[in-house]
Amino acid sequence: MFESKLPNSSVSIFSQMSGLASQHSAINLSQGFPEFDAPELLKNQLNFYVQQGVNQYSPSSGVPRLQQQIANLVARKYAAKIDAAEQVTVTSGATEALFVAIQTIVRPDDEVIVFDPAYDSYQPAVELAGGKTVHIALHAPDYAIDWQTVRSAVSKNTRAIIINTPHNPSGKILKSHDINALKSLVSDHNLYVISDEVYEHITFDGDIHLSMLCDEQLREKSFVISSFGKTFHSTGWKMGYCIAPAPLATEFRKIHQYVTFSSFTPAQHALADMLEQQGEHVDALSNFYQQKRDLLAQHLSDSRFTILPSQGTYFLLLDYSEVSDLNDVDFCHWLVEQAGVAAIPLSVFYKQPSNDKVIRLCFAKNDETLIEAAQILCQL
Image (cartoon, rainbow, N blue to C red; front, side):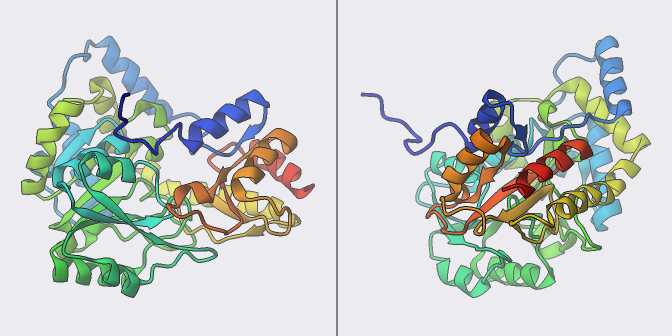
């Protein structure tokens, strides 16, 4: 009998709920992709480079012009000086970057601390590297990290901590006291940080994103992973990147070259043009998505759902305790099949299922879609 390397993995909840949404012709607020299109300049430049014949392999670490534009963006946003050629690696999406970063540093029997609810690719990648994830549960309504609990979870086998800020699915962002606590742990125990920052440009209410790149000490111990798909409404392009200190980037690239070798060449050139010519798109994302968050929350204000704070990302959490006694998985199935709205249950992001009655909605949708979904939810 064939022995699976990932015996506990199955079809992701995102694929399940999107499939049910299609089957029941429901409004899909489950999977985290925008309903609107990528910027015109980006699309036009992609077509331009394809027509110009820029269709062959690019350098494995990335098109130099795009690497430099990424370094320029980091300097502008985080006042951090990055060597584009030595530290920036373009990848086929953030999930590839996460996988490669984990394979780079995790050895058999190493432990990696993750915070639940956690993005579902972390644990399988750690297990494939021969390591073990150590899960620390965060709970509604604030999903705050108890750093003393984290410190107690560190053992002689702890190799790294995976950070996700802004956090999917909770919408929580790390604050300065979190960064200071993390820095202390990293220093005291010689740990690495894998920092999933794919929603870095989407924060609300004047809060700023505190990247690992902002702190010199953390920058030297971190793989910082970002997503063009989230930034430029182009998740289907699967384009991302990883920034790491040169010695770590060198090891990262050794594995990256055997995973994808290089990423979509014409898209890299188009993205370089987008960053160079319309960098203001990045700066406008927070206001753009805050308006959508506020629109959805406003139209849910008369519902029986409790709206939890969203400090960043394009997700909003709802507590449905006053609506149903079902567990969150069953409630999401009922919601898509009977009410016609697809959402994501939060318990699937936990190693030990949470009893919180919370679901996740994606508000990266057209205003009309958000209003129609809210009207349905208000009737429950």
